[in-house]
Image (tube, rainbow, N blue to C red; front, side, top):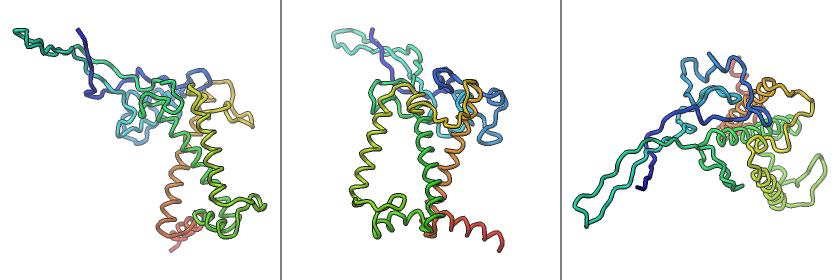
Length: 263
């Protein structure tokens, strides 16, 4: 008899957590992450699928995006008019859905957009972009005195430069160049199916040799990275909000905010 399943109630499980914290190995979380670990809110209770094995895991998933799903399985009934009595569908049991399944397709690597590994990959990539933005905005404003949101407008009016050298390209040409080059890099990164190599393409960036082969040290460094990434994403939101509301750049908005405490 055939059987089928449909998405029913959702349940939490820690059986599907298998994130890597060191190259080719599952990292060892610090002792604080195993019991009585810090959470995103003092009275918060971490769901069991966020068990602290992931760097920066503070049990934050209020909307249950990464919560594993559970399927209810039933047999198929019969609908034969020649029978005196047809069989009804019968409940068979529950089937746990594995979200973090690699499809083998580079542009659609995961079977679900809400698997824990996929969400962590997106968080880390977005956080790195945010860290670059925050550094670029602050340094750019400090050097040129131009607010970050007006930098493109000034260059479009006065000509594009790079480290003081004029570029013989128009704004549209530079835009297309950046789209194509960054698109190629991102597509190339997506051809890798190993989660560790996807989030650390080319290996870990460690020019100062701070990392070690010790799994716990590597775990702590990855946790520091994700903390800075999250802080940068919040800073980006603050920069954008201040620019939209006051028209001030990041450094000017900070000066205004700091001066308000003296009034």
